Length: 256
Ligand SMILES: Nc1ncnc2c1ncn2[C@@H]1O[C@H](COP(=O)(O)OP(=O)(O)O)[C@@H](O)[C@H]1O
Ligand SMILES: [Mg+2]
Image (cartoon, rainbow, N blue to C red; front, side):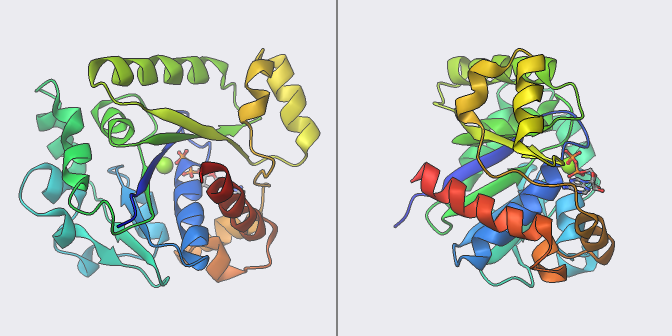
């Protein structure tokens, strides 16, 4: 039995591309025939919709699991991509999270439930919401690794330091050896843009954690979102789809 690598896409600023990365990284790993479970942990349900999953396609979702009404296996749906399954989310996750947040320690629930499917998937990719709240803490507490998604267009320095503090909170309070899987830059056109951004933001010391592959700004991403399909299914030769495939390869070898 393989142990799953559970990776939460971190980086709290909205619009850095966490959901785009969750969907397209999960798809790329699946195209390399890795068994992948994508978990949508955001009431917006972007990952769910962008994989082409509609509310009619499922009876149970992550809210059913977190509230104890369904088993993990009953809340997993196949996507149109071979090797890629998803645990969908919808707006009802918001109410469930409000209730669960009242009891300290509940942020460990997803981590505990995932033990039921760990081993069936090589990768479990979790897409969290874009602010520090119960659900983002739940998504990070469930992970072995955080993949930090960054953009040179957003001032991410404070964001990065907040993330390190939350990571420390989880490591100390829950005794979970959470690690950073590296930094991925999205919506970026050259490597030089990344290097000068890191220098300007006093983040030069994290340079060695930045992946060689970066994701360019590409209209194919927006078109794929409109069509509710991953970018590789829209145009596998597009710059963003190729970048996500290279990134999946780079990350897979780095984490081995
Ligand atoms: N590489 C990209 N190229 C073009 N547009 C992008 C790219 N990445 C993200 N976007 C746009 O930014 C929006 C926000 O991305 P999203 O993944 O939802 O961010 P987050 O989940 O971090 O809030 C997307 O709806 C998409 O329109
Ligand atoms: Mg998102």
